[in-house]
Image (cartoon, rainbow, N blue to C red):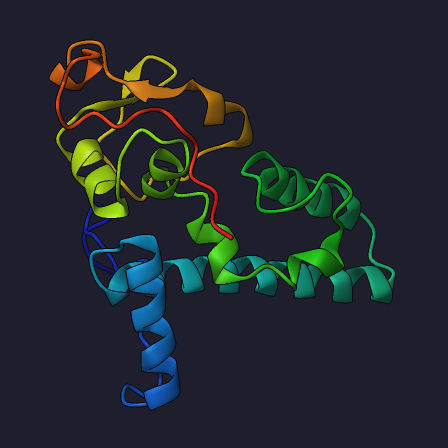
Length: 180
């Protein structure tokens, strides 16, 4: 059985490791979102795969007429809506259309950059790992933290950080970045 506290992989690697098209898409995602490596892309893909699998199972159960499925479906939908990956009027069918980019946009690293707290995505990652960023008064040092919809406006510089001073030379002016 093994030791219960042992760390296990939270992602699945690609089945065919040397597909040129897939590798090019992964490299683009790594560049566009300032990720450390492809492993972070694989984690996002695995998480989306999990939500899609659950959604397909719940859709199949509802078509079979099983009872008690509505509560489970509502829990999944509420969870995705809280994280901003699904619109308020979304249903189980719309869970199947979630893309990896939707999940990567919810990462703290991307949110810090989009809100104008950092000049680049790499700098936002550095600010987070060095402890310069807070969410609702708590220091967060994980760039892959998924930001909930209600936490978006509470992202700011940590008060004990040198970045909290307005005159810091590396501090970006707070103008939200719009990708277009």
